[in-house]
Each structure stands twice: as C-alpha cells, then as structure tokens.
Image (cartoon, rainbow over all chains, first blue to last red; front, side):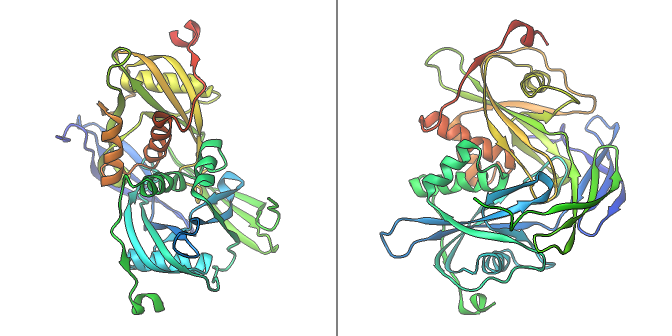
Length: 202
Length: 202
C-alpha cells in the first residue's frame, strides 16, 4: 500500500528525560501536510517474551510456565509470560534463553521464534520478540537484585479462561495467548530449532 | 492467592517529566524485603479500543473496520483497531463511541464491553478498555488537528493471517484479535447493549 500521505518525518530532536530507567525524546516532525507537530516517546532497547511449554513426558497434559509479579505502575500482582529487556548488543535468542533461565530456572532444549509485537505504538519504541520454548529442564533461578516473582504453571484452558475473565490483562501475555491458541489448534505452526550446547551453557 | 511477599509500597514520589504529552513519575518504593528501589513510569489517563463489526446485511460476509496510521515511535504505518485516549472525566462507553465516530465516521447501534488490558505494565499506568461495536452506519469523520489515518476493512481470516505473518504487530490489536477469534468461534460471548438516542447523538 502507498503510505506517503501518512508518513511523518523528523525535523529536530530534544532529549527531555534521562532517568535511571526511562529515556524520553521530544521530536518535532513534519506532518504529511508539511505542518509541524510534536512527538514525545520513550526510547527502549527492545525485549523478549518466552512462552515455555512444559510436558513431563510425551502425551502428558501440557502446562505453560508463567509468572506472578507485582507491577508497580498498575498497582497489582499480574499473571504474565516470562519476559525481559535486551542487554546492549545481545542476540534475541540468547536473551530469550537468559531470561527464561534467570526468572524461572528452566532451560529449554528447543526454541521457536513466533513473531514480534509493539506493546505501545503511541509513545514507546519498544518491541517484544515472541519465542516459544519446549523440552524444559528445571534448575535454579537467578533473579536480578530487587526482583521478586513467583513461578506458576497453568493449562492452556486456564490461560484462555483468565484472558476472558480479566485475570490476565497484560498486553504481551494476551498477544502471546493468541499465538498459543493457534499453535495448539494446529492453525499456525512454528519452526523449532535445537539449542546448541554452547548457547545452552550460558 | 496470597501476594504480600510480592507487593511494593510507595515511600516517596517525584514528578520528573511534565511534557506536552507525557508525564513521568519516579517513585521510591519499599520492596517486599523492605529495601528501597526506584520505579519510573508514564502516568496515563487510560484509553479505549473498538473492534467494529461491519455486516452489510444479515448473512453477508463479516468485515472488521481497521485503521492504517503512521506511528512515529516505531517509524512505520501500522494496521490497528480504532482507539483513543479518555478525555478528563469521560465515561468509557462515551469515549468508545466518540473515537469510533471521529476516526472512522461510523456510528454503531449495539455495543459490548469485552475486557481490559494493560499495554505496558513495566512503565505505564495506561489501561485500554476493549469494546465491540456492530450495527454500523457510515458517516463523516472528524479527525483531530494533525491526525492522519486511513480507514480500511478486513475479513477476520485476513486479520488472523496478518497477526501470524507480522503485518500486525500492535499489541492492543493482537489482544483484540484474541477476543475476535474466540467471539466468532462461539467460545466466548458478549453482552450487547443498544445505544440510546441520547448517547448516540453525541
């Protein structure tokens, strides 16, 4: 589709917040009609989310690993898929493996890249890369300093019910559940790859 | 579930950015182990998203109204469901009707509240209230000053394909598609209510 009539172009840039965690820019932009407007937004390095599929043995009921974590901006403990921010220069798959291991203790033998989402297109550059993991082996967690979260497991039916009844409101987890539902129904498929020993050693 | 071991409590607050559009706070919080930590986050009034179901007549193929809009922070024209921010003191349903009318020109005879999502729990207070609309009548748009967007329609199958192939990456739209898919399959249901003349006049 032809988009020239919608595109905005940078005129000038100002860094208006350099916080401990958040960086905010204010750009002046040329609108499609050449007038000027202001765009303020958070600059973010990107993140990954992992949907870890836990199956004790072939044919056993599938469980999905999730986290319960207090999210200060919304003031609630929420139920969500494991996720975390990219370290500078970090490969997406390496980040997915690291976050799963640090937050839940699990290592996965197989991984598949599902897609990418943008959680908040209006005022953040953040993207979240969506991964599935299976062939899980439990181990020790290594939470960041000051990080508190519980690891739980849920059946796909429970997760769908929680999306419907408002137990799950986290945007990335709702988006991940769309993937989970269509993967399990067979409507969508994934290209699984095996973790090399080197990558798994981490 | 018992959450006391996860909850963080406000110790002190600082407003660190009062932009034209973005307000950012830095709170010092007591962690569950009583140590102190810093939380920086965007303060947002909340928003609504509308999934407008368009059917020329009973039995006609269903189309869904969407928008194509340039989203400056991610630098792309994206495909998304209509959405917009609450005005101060505005009722959620009134906001849903206003945003649908202003951005697409459509008025809807029937509305249903689906649920609520939080697009970015790590650093924004924003919630997005999810609504469905049907019984659509086309009319004139009333875009905000400096707002440029195209209105399109798509079949549910196209929308699902776009979620799978990366054409749709917008978090709220992926979450809305989870609702759309389960509504159309009959797995989830909605409680539809009719727009009163007074509310529809707007």
